[in-house]
Amino acid sequence: AAIVDADLFIVDDGAGGTNRKVTASRIKTYAGGANTPSFRATMSANQTVGDGYAKLSMDTEDWDTDSAYDHSTNYRFTAPSAGKYWLSAWIDQGTTSNEELNYPIVFYKNGSALKYYQPSPTYADNVARFRAQASMIVSLAEDDYIEVYCNGSSGNFTVANGSSFEGFKLIGV
Image (cartoon, rainbow, N blue to C red; front, side, top):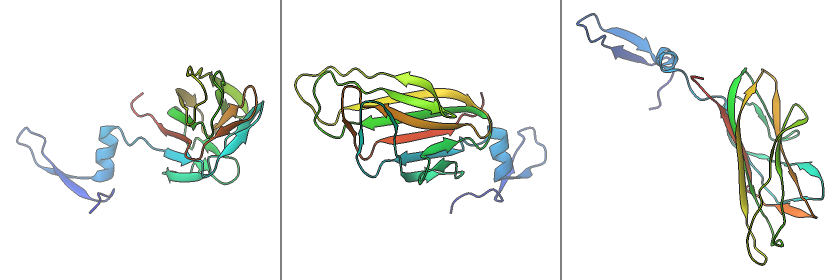
């Protein structure tokens, strides 16, 4: 069975003292807690991005421990508590595109561009399913939110279904 916060463990202090019963939630506190909130959302369909920045519609949750990711309207992660967070976006190219097509990935914080990533693929001829990844560690206050945008650069660009946005709160920093 899965361990739950109310489960008891016997702890030996190693000095011949009295053994104590400790709850699972107390052990989590001693160990530094869990990397939560944690979430992962993916796109259920391709999304065409034109020459300009567009928010990516990561509309399917694989998990969301604290209901902090909005997968139905705003497609954003909202920090339920202050701290440092690791966030990542994986963008898959959905169709065959010409060489030299660049598509910046941008993390937006509270509606403003925060961090730009400029993948510059170097490949010959036309290819399909090029994949770019961007990640960052960022300090967030409670209720700060992060969204993922992409730019079609020199024309229409298709971001493939299965592209993802994920993250978790760091512990111990």
